[in-house]
Amino acid sequence: MSKSATFDFSEFEAFAKNFHKQAYEANAKEFLIGALELIGDNTLRVVKSKTPEGHYGTTIFRAVGERNNKKLIVFEGDSQGKTGGNLRRSWEVTEVKYSGKTFFIQVINPEDYASFVEDGHRGLGKKTKWVEGEHMLELTLEKIENQIPRLVKKDYIKYLKKFGVE
Image (cartoon, rainbow, N blue to C red; front, side, top):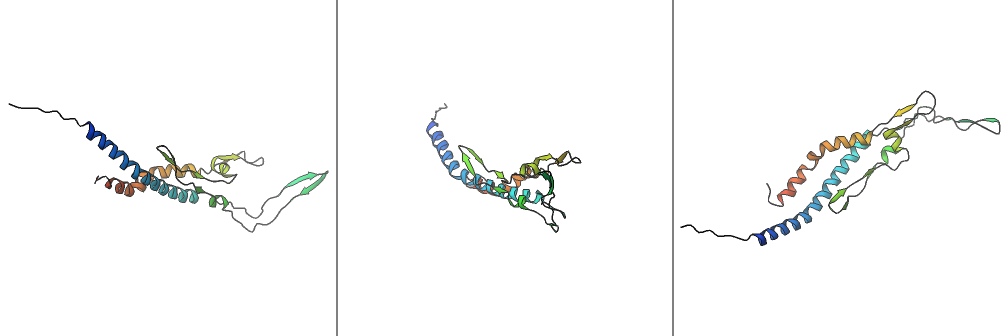
């Protein structure tokens, strides 16, 4: 004759759930911050390499106007082939921030003209109506998005090993 028994696993399930939650919260935050810092560093490296430097040619600028009915040339000079690089040097990544379960970083360029180089702008003069943008940040984000699994794989495996997952 066979006997059956019933078991109440509710206490064990509550324990396991609480244990997993505490272990996850302690380790997940550390893992996510490290992963986002790694992604941010790679994003910064790539976006800087895609950002063009300004090349000023031989004339810095020339402004001609009128003041008090007289023609006025404000400045014309030789830049001796000077190049810029301020836009490229200005890229930065913020520290990892989080709100609730959402972790994020920001890739920013505080230069006033960064959006014009990124997205494009109206041209000066009659010959150029529109100057196409370089889309350096947009292209970088597309590239990095495809690389994220490869970038964080090693750290993710270490993270899982803390829970006994091989």
